[in-house]
Amino acid sequence: MDISIVVVSWNTKNFLVECIESIISTTKKYAYEIIVVDNASSDGSPDEIKEHYPQVLLIQNESNLGFAKANNIGIMMKSTGRYVCLINSDVKVLPECLDTICDYLDSNPSIGLLGPTIFNSDRTLQPSCRKLPSLWTTLCSALGLDKMFLRSNFYSGEQMLFFKHDKIIDVGALSGCFLVARRSAIDSVGFLDEDFFMYSEDVDWCKRFHRLKWRVVFYPEAKAIHYGGGSSANARLKFFIERERALLQYWKKHFGCAYARIHLLMRLLHYGIRVLGGSMLWIVIYSKRRMYGSKIIKNFTCLRFLLRYSNPKS
Image 1 (spheres, rainbow, N blue to C red):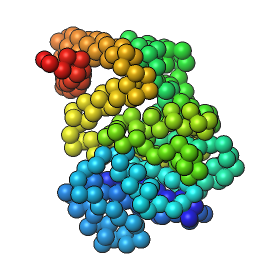
Image 2 (cartoon, one colour):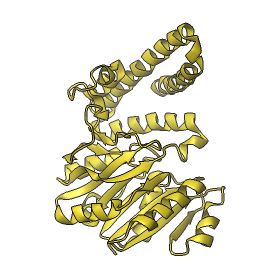
Image 3 (tube, rainbow, N blue to C red):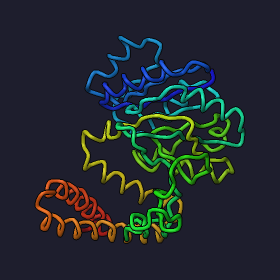
Image 4 (cartoon, rainbow, N blue to C red):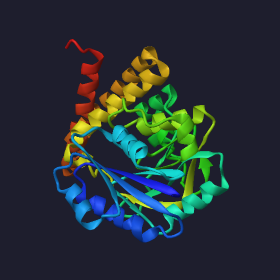
């Protein structure tokens, strides 16, 4: 088997069907297997797979085990490919994507982890390259320097907004919505860290690949669409909180409690600025109150969580 494609699903039946169909219709050159790991969906996803896709290997978890653990179950229990592809259920693979990736990985054995070009549903670019987190990138994001200096690498923060995603480059981290890992690299690096329930497990994995001198590469010749919010749309505010929790967990793991505390203070600054600024815009710009109101709720929810996190006795 050339490539094992692991798709974790939680209540995303329609997206999941489109994802599977796109893999089947676009992958022609290499032998592949599709492994769906269902996190106790209640929308009929498992029955849909059983009825219409008997060739898909289905693993049904009795509860929602989170993204990292579910992917690990798919990799460890069923996968046999020399490459392992982790794809979100709300991703549509575009023509020749996986074939092109396998071609490139076969020619570049130093690459341990690779990610393709990702588009939004309207075919606009969805930035998928990241720098690994640092106090400087966190501060740039908090102060909005990444948005003020869009063409600057120095002030870009983690998001690399200056990069046009138009050439092959080695990067710090890749978006976890679509990752292809070399089996031999996984054997040395290890699986996803299951302590991360959702979010930051991709950044953590990339950092561990770097640590063992495997290249992490963005490869623009391969392309896919990520609709975004397939699972998180079911409980969006909760997932914003989970993202902040995972970031703090990442900082504690790799930098220790002292640096995690500094990161926490910078995130408080980040959301404090946005709650204040958004409130002022909500008052001044009446025609956009709905948009600003939504952003205020999101930013205030994260701010409140971080304040409680910093003072657990309150």
